[in-house]
Length: 205
Image (cartoon, rainbow, N blue to C red; front, side, top):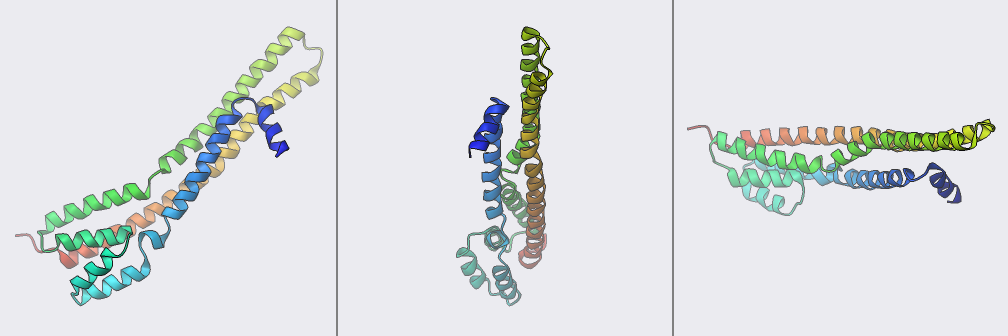
């Protein structure tokens, strides 16, 4: 703990927004890992039950089990049942709008993670430039008789660049992984919507 505090103090004021950025990234990562679990978005047991019931045209049972679930797939199935019998174009538009809402839910906060990954190295560079300016100002005021002083100042200034990269690199990796996960789930939701469209929509008049 003392080592961390010393590291932050040596890096200067830029270390504080970098620390805040790292905490934001960590909290959003944990939240998205929870939100993008398959069982929370498209439980396999629920989809299997719905598929079997739709094949046997047991729509009341489908409505019953969908009403007892709180996930994206259940909301999509519930909407499809309400729109059942509508013209294909109306049904398709309603499912597409619902799909867009679910997509926004799946990708929520990923933009903030991307922002943290983008801004963190820039903050680190700002801290380095600020530290270099202070070091050279000290040299200008006191003279360059002690090269160790200049080297020490530059070393401390580079700490912020290292800290910025340490925040940005894992955040960027996590952002890409979570985005890929969200896109995979969105693709499966689109496939479900297509199956519901074929099963429940009427032909165009």
